Image (cartoon, rainbow, N blue to C red; front, top):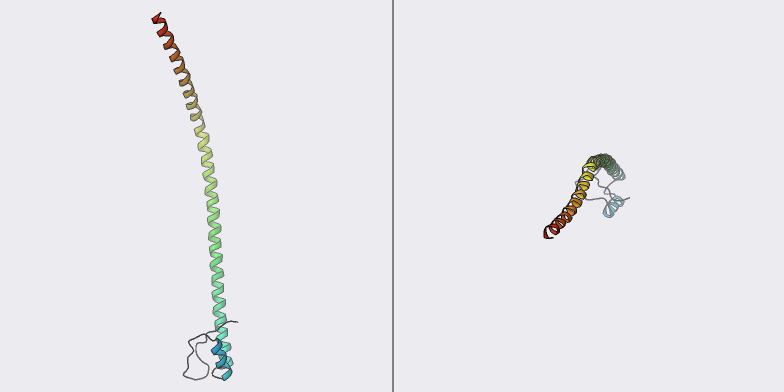
Length: 127
């Protein structure tokens, strides 16, 4: 079962227990230094303290789980909003991007035409 920590002996005695009731406590019990009711009350106190600590740990875990669920929910909402904003941004920017690429293609064709015209003009002047 484990060790228990009694606070004071039941019988009037100058001995105050400050260590856990383990192997030496069993010897004290068998020799009559401490009574069974003292051990039972100490065990009951220790068990109650253990149960209270167990409950508080369970509540703490539940609190942390709820915080985790809330954070996960918040992050999933944020991610969905971010994706929606990116989608709208891409749609908004698609038209200007396509115009820019079209203009760059027109510039390239105009430069080629200009080079050919300059070559033709220089050939006409030389002849």
